[in-house]
Length: 152
Image (cartoon, rainbow, N blue to C red; front, side, top):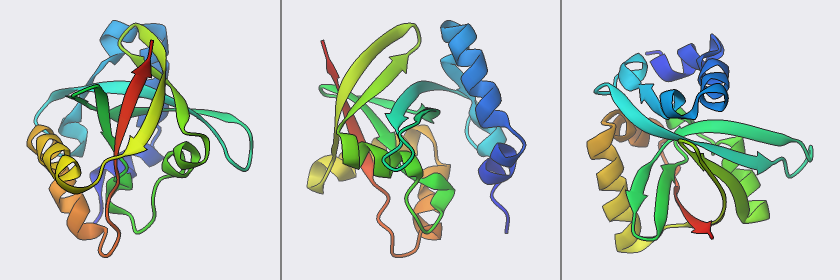
C-alpha cells in the first residue's frame, strides 16, 4: 500500500509549502492535511537545520503541537524504517532555526521520553491521526518526539 504523504512529497508539495511559507508566513502556517489523510488545515512550522555531513542548511515544514515550554514535532518520515535526515541533524547540532507563522527564533532541541513522550505522542495523534499508522509502519523504529524550546 502506498503512502500519500511520500507520494505527494515526490511531486514537490514540500517545496511548494516551504516557498509559500517563506513568502507569506501567515498563509503558509496552516497546511491542508487532507493530502495525507488528515482532518484539514493544521499548523506547521519551518525547521532549519544544518546538514551534519553536507554543512548545507535545510528548511523543512513540519506539523507541530504546542507543549509546555515550546513546540513538539514528530520525526515520523511517513512511517519509514529510518529517521528523517533532519532528525539526525538536530541530534548532531542541538540548536535549530525555527519559524512559527511570522515568529522566527532559535530553539534548543531535546527528544521527549517516558510519560512526557507518550502524552505528546497522544496529543499529536489526536491532531493528525495518520501518525498512528506511521507508528505501525515504522516497525521496530520508535518514532522520535522532539521538543523545540525557544531561546529568547
